[in-house]
Length: 116
Image (cartoon, rainbow, N blue to C red; front, side):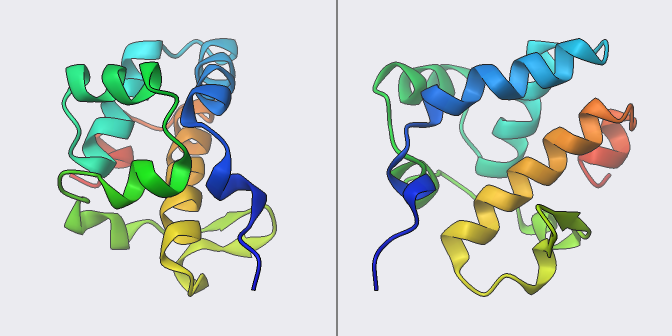
């Protein structure tokens, strides 16, 4: 089975789109970074290093220091697919991130986005 194209894309190539989506709705790059760090366990410095290295999505999630156990509380639809029903682990992690960025852009409070 061939890998999905997103797995080999660098996080760096998509990251500006996350930031732009958030900023268009009055949110900030700092909030985008906070979400990514919350989800993956990367520190701000580690996140910046991954972006600088042009790490692909598959490696980014495989090397994540500590995937947040609360991420399983993320529910909903992204690209017409329920994130909680995705069986492929890497794709589910990518879609979790997409869903969190969507929630940020829709104005949801950070406390709720981070499942506190």
